Length: 473
Image (tube, rainbow, N blue to C red):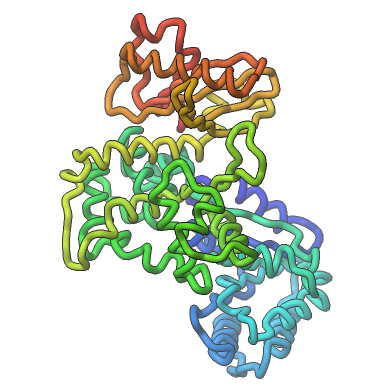
């Protein structure tokens, strides 16, 4: 039984039962579970399935198509088509032979970007198939690819024969913390919220990564084996991650590495200065593709303009790899039990927890009881000047009901107790934000921490909302 993906399964059910043909594009980053979703939901119902070959030539892809067609009809003579027009004509003929029932025929083409290379002329054949036959024959065509930016540009926003032909789109995102918990429960692996958070910090909600986790072992033990053992899957995943998604992956990796060193994010000008990549359309494309693929997030700080946009690395695994794994020699092991006690881990974990909170903004809104209120999310930075100290606010939730939540995010392995110094710092943040933003909205200080807050004379009357780890699930 499939865990989670409730919304996605509802979409698949609706388009399968619809009375018209559908062209569905499923996008999402590598290892997020796109292929599993389609195969599991349509088990026993796929009339044709083909998976593209990475780095395969057009000749090899066409032979792969012929093999895939023979899988469906073993009695058919193996005919390797000379081009994609002929290939899709053969598929059309096969689907017409099977039209004995009114049940919708499902065609699944996986890893489409590996097939539809620049000189393959694949999209010509595919457009012919959809426009001349599938769109009128009660067929559900599902196209899937991990190169999210390519899928958006070449398929969803296609300007040629597939213009406006995609009828549905599914952007498959990583599991949330709640879905991650359900995933492990379905596997009879039981973790408390802190252990789940620990794992999520290192690998995010990527199902294929989570599948490596073993029951009966702590999060730290699993991280040791999966990330630090020379044979661990996530020890070498980074080398494949970007190269499988992007042409000239070195430029993408360079930007990711730069962003990993600046947790608050970098402006476009700072990225240009540090990466030596020229400022222009090429850089724009790289940043857009990294964002569309879920690796970075672009955001405008509070009261700033679009030109002040900051780019921040938000892929959990990439952040963890670049901080702790990449420096290890190929045959070198390291103990996560030891690393997790260092100051480097303590400072990194605070950022990682902040990152996870930003990824679970809907859960935070639900815990605050403001799900039905329109909001915008920002961060806030103020440099020190002659009149005031500098400050930073991790997350602002700017609400339409004339309230702004100033969220203080704190990762701690126990119940947090506010010291006098900490309280004074929060008072300073609130006062300075009100002064510089000139807002007339009500300001609430909202504390988000792992195990909640121990109330004392410093917190009473200062902290308006307290959210714990459980509120992120």
